[in-house]
Image 1 (cartoon, helix red, strand yellow):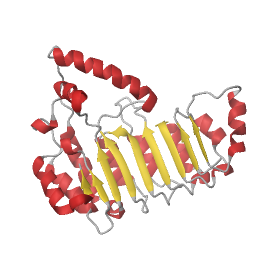
Image 2 (cartoon, rainbow, N blue to C red):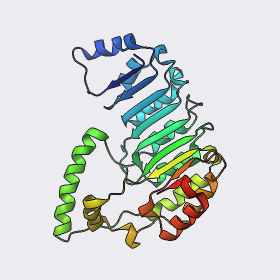
Image 3 (tube, rainbow, N blue to C red):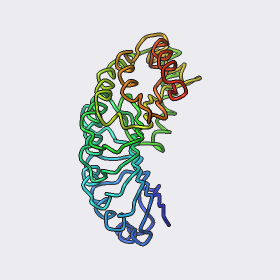
Length: 276
């Protein structure tokens, strides 16, 4: 097979035997992991059988494992990378993992990078200032408070969050809004990065909720549409200016976190190339 995806944390039978025989399905073109891979596990997986690998996905990526990935000569042909950089520091940040992914990695020909976990301002700034991927054409990032494990666990956490939001909404409890304005300097750093001008597609999303979930979330966190907390116009316009090249195909931005005036301005300037 050209593609293998591992969804379980432990394969049937002896785990060491499983990793040893992983190479029987190689060489691969696409490889994906739903569970967390430890450094020791990656050392068993890594090898010459990955030399043709073009696409790699980690639903949950640890910083220590990332260091090994970025230094593996067997991943030099990688062109598409998707990862959820887990927040593991005491401050809940994932900037280290992001930095390992983009600062002088072996995959110098990488064309597409998707960071599926939420990035805080420090991680976005590191992405902007440390990235050496000059051939990158497609960047997809999600901003917000860095979180933990991905899709499967996140689904359960989301259900618990809905219940908690509902209780707080109807008992009139609340907390401070998420400071989206803090992302202004981070977007300015992105706008100033030379490699950003090579992008054909740039997507920055927030996971902002709509419908019933949006109502409940707004009761707890405050609504960007009410002007409680918006990303400043200046950095947004600067980023749009930076990517507004003949090569640009699509710019995706978190509409609910932008002012109506900046949305109107970008729509006028970029037409169908911008999506909110």
